[in-house]
Length: 429
Image (tube, rainbow, N blue to C red):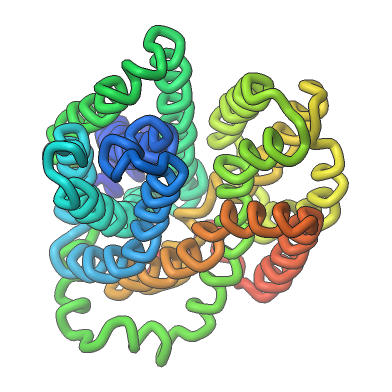
């Protein structure tokens, strides 16, 4: 019996084993993705030449950025693999790639031992992880939507960002703990390896759990249809141009919101607005816990009122509030907490149903490729560049421009959502 038929026949009993396997696997992916940025300051001079620490850190962050541009390739290739072989097989592959990359980083030789081989190996590990992340997003999203009953797709989709937010919290708390119990010399010499070892071990657990997952409903039928498709990426543009534009326009604001609040805001608040790093960390941690708690209720709300009313409200409020919110960023902890809580409250209205919206855009035989390519391309172009853009504009004395840029993106996404068909309660195919 398929997962979907089980959950339909016992309407209010979710397939906990499947949801747990997807969630833990996805959490591992996002944990591994996050710890690289969190600990880059400590291993930069270990993997790159330590003659110039600033150049070493810049090289480490550049390697982080390179991984973003391999996400679309991973999304395309692993998405096609999942359309042909099944979401379960693809998700086993992605977690193996991500955890393997973490183990590889954990045991990397230092620059003093291996010379330029060390950064080359780091780059290769990050490329593998970038491709893994590209494949994970598309396949976890498709799987969650495909195993859900039509009237509960928003609820099932919410588990994606429940696990993502939990992973971010775990990575942040581990960072805080290690910086508390180890000094800078210990962190730089060996302590930075600990989070990557943990990520690799968690990946083994996630891999074991995913091996026991049932495949999504109608996979064999969908695979037959997928095999008949030639040039699937071109087919998404030729036969589903509206879906492509819908995904790009929808993801535009979503990825900017994610990388602004979870990545770019912290260094901006500390460097440009005089906030204390610890205050920013605590405010973001509280807001992230709230964000995780809101996912399921927001998914349930979208199942009740529809995708469009919720998404239009989110985009409109974001366009109106983001610039005023940016004025509050500064030394005050209370104001920082307001900024993060309001921003992530708005984003939760969208993030809870991202997998549902993406899966509803494409037919099953093109779903892995369609989400994998177009979602990840948008993330690479806009989300991945957000921290660099806010830093560049701040250095040029035009930090406010970044928040007007976010407001403009919200308007574009709002217009996309007006045009988006409402698919609440409808069959995916």
